[in-house]
Length: 405
Image 1 (tube, rainbow, N blue to C red):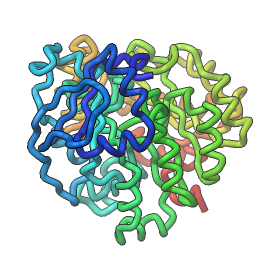
Image 2 (image 1 turned 60 degrees about the vertical axis):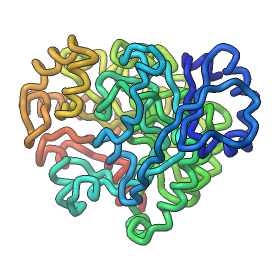
Image 3 (image 1 turned 180 degrees about the horizontal axis):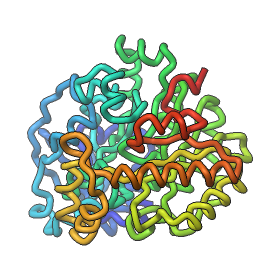
Image 4 (image 1 turned 30 degrees about the horizontal axis):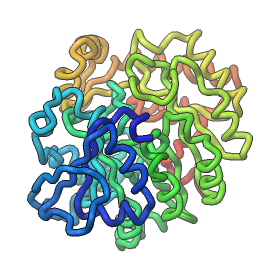
């Protein structure tokens, strides 16, 4: 399976080697070692016998800061631990797709978004035009590599899977401040900076682990992968009993190079399988990018197919480019950087760029009109359209606690 995912190099944190063997990945690692290279890295070389060839890289132990979460560490580029391109003789732009790092979880994996911005929630909510309060994740770099992704801060690091994230998640759930927020009814976004429906995440059963830890909690799973409709995943979702799917679809295949399907084709079969199993699916048509996926006829067709597949609700929003996103895309996709700079013409706040306000308002009204004709409900995810958001929406985002009462 690791070979099918395209990785040629596997890095394993020495602190989790024994745990990986316990979870029965040994035969898979032995198979991988026949066509790829395995590196074990850490402060000390493992004393236990390793039944496959590997190279050891001495790495100073990372300073553990319990107050830091995974998103904070990514934003600060704290994962720049090696110059992998020199060690592996790989171009920097190939590291993300060719190198997989199985890492011991150091940072917290449940984030209070307001705390991330050093704000109280209501201030954060108004500033970001977003109701998201809590999010959890099992990776530091998502394997999808979508060019428009807001977390593409550093494309020169390996795809990093937090192997034991579920243990850290359980610890985070027991922290008094987070426990209080959850008790108030706030749902948890399972995904956020990564996709639990990716081939890699499902291979390591991360979605199963997350739902197991989050039993009896209100959760919504953000994904753009039809693999979320695999039989064993559906079984885990139904067993959890309090989960919704927010399925992202954009039709922007050229900007989504590593999705596990051709995203020009709406995944009706997979979504129908979910809804047929009485799993609620919200279609997130986001990001809308001027001139790329904003034609009314095409949007109508997507929404029509979604309804036929059992979706009764749409959520939608626009591409937003912040300064970290700009720096990443300028280096890795200069052609899109130039285009995005052109169509994202309005600065919002100090660092963010969006399509013009007139465009956002016109599109929001158009989207509401399409949904009305198709008898679909609609909510808006960070559209930055001011008071019109509450006037045009006739549903609540899954991140709103009022929705779950």
